[in-house]
Image (tube, rainbow, N blue to C red; front, top):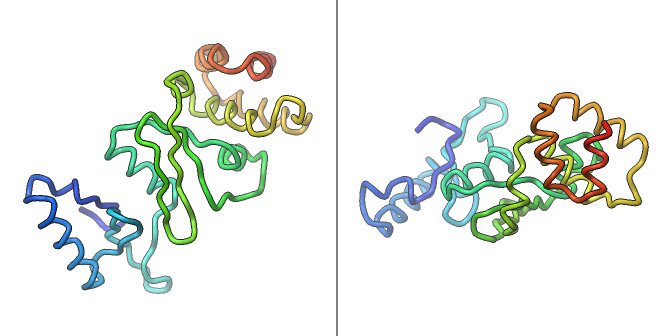
Length: 182
């Protein structure tokens, strides 16, 4: 594996039993070859002469976990608002809707929370439209400002029309109207 890879004991199932793999990963961590970023999650760090070990983003860690679990995720709440530029706030605790297992993973001072949801919430086709739906749910029906609608309109112009039409059917009625009117 190349530097910057996120590793799990399950990556080495073909080599030996789980206990042997865990012991080996622990030894590599003790030798400072690997960094344990959370329980059962290791990093083969990239090195920088000035900064030292470079850590992956919370999103990269979340994507590695769902890749291992073969699940899907959608960011919710403040994370969706931040990604769309509707908020400057950077969340310390990121919540993802998932069809995988519900759990919380502590990474340093931050928390990644996977919250189980219905298949309907994950049936959206567009990445932008899924963020818009989650961001608008966070804002609330009566709290959406004209400035936020303008930003949403700009984002919707980047999304395929077929995705907007498909995803608008899955959204609550008030969000669907916003998506279709832009």
